[in-house]
Length: 179
Image 1 (tube, one colour):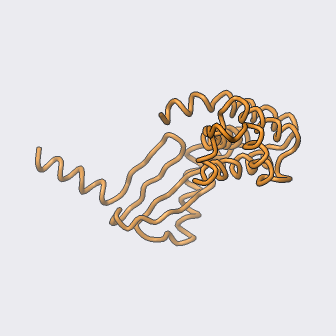
Image 2 (cartoon, rainbow, N blue to C red; image 1 turned 90 degrees about the horizontal axis):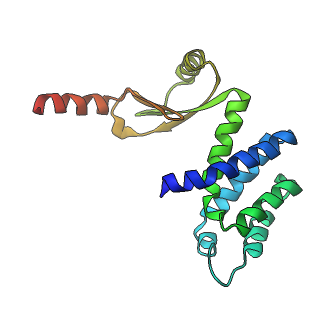
């Protein structure tokens, strides 16, 4: 189903990106779409999406009221269009695709580093610099901690995954020994 949602979301994300680009409002639209996606994910709102007694206009207005001034009139119309086409449930995918398009246009890439322990600031800085050099883009580094990795780190940037965790190495070694 996730693949289906991405397929459905792609043209909407591109349309939103084009509209935001024309208005030089990528940052505000990105923030607004992220907020709108969080609203749709809320279990109380998710139950209303597709409910026969709640009109698409009511749903759109609810989201617009929460997003507020973050979104201009074309952005509000975009949300209304999503509601009318019964596509509000793909707002999280639209927001994620929009962010990727925005980052690409701005020459930025989000990289998530998951490590067993918190990385010192100096190590995060060196890692961001090395990744920026390798990827040819400005790097936005996001750090997460997962003690189950034991040691090392896992890097995720878009579709690229570099798994340098000790857990992964142990799993590969176990496979070699048992094969």
